[in-house]
Amino acid sequence: MRKSKDIQERILHRMKISAGHLRKVIEMVENQDHCVSILHQTQAVQKALKETDNLILENHLKNCTTNAILKGDEETAIREIISVFKKKNV
Image (tube, rainbow, N blue to C red; front, side, top):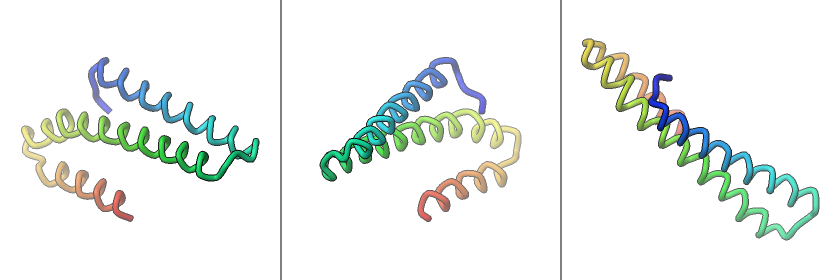
């Protein structure tokens, strides 16, 4: 994955947020906290991961996809993006 230092820092920051939320979920389950509270925390994990995915996809589109198209390899670029969306909807 080619990315600028800024994008890499943002992705790592989002991943660390996700990891923190997940640690909290594990702690809450171990402590047998209220189910709704746990669900709120798991939703926070999912949101943080989704935001990370968005950053990675944005980076891919701006760099890898654009470069592939400029080099005349549109088919590969399009196939990669379609595969991401197909897996996302599974």
